[in-house]
Image (cartoon, rainbow, N blue to C red; front, side, top):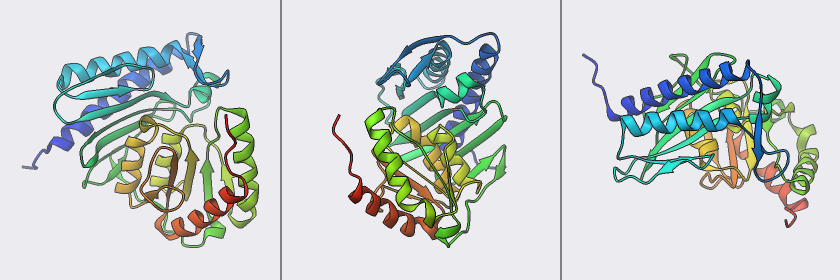
Length: 271
């Protein structure tokens, strides 16, 4: 009989809640869209479904694991005592969700003092469930996945995202012009967790972005690492939400060098 570990249980719980919340949001969208507010800027939108999905996930986590801590993008949370902390993004890619594009997802990840434990990223419009547990590999709809084996950065298909702040977005777009001719091409899906999972399964060779949050990357970065990808900040140090680079191992160092050089030429502007 196969042994069931704690991380298996966390992974299954994340998958179940991500699927339930994503299905609810997708069904609700078909009945009509309503924006209920914005966050940092007018382009950083929140819908009623973001909040409903987060409440559904937090309720499920609290019922299943009442002693765990929870951090939610839309402000929901709980301070627990177990040492396990969940990070929840109920809809990553709200703009894609609003426009009916399939590249949005629900992302749920758990971590302890040693790092990410388990996570699930569900894309409702594609019915794709990415998940992983620490040391146990990553899957897409239950099938093992591996990242790209690419070693030639000139052939790398690279995804990125841009800030909601107009001035930062302008600087970031200028950086891309510094090296777009040195790679295969750039893609923008509009959701960090989706981009990172696409690196995990080899649909993309790399992804980079700045100024994210823990709920954007916790689950997806674990999935990518368990699929063999390498992750870190732009300079190759430890990954932090302020700077995220996830790629096939064979092109990580080359992309790191390109990003660091472009940062020097186009540093961030003050807000």
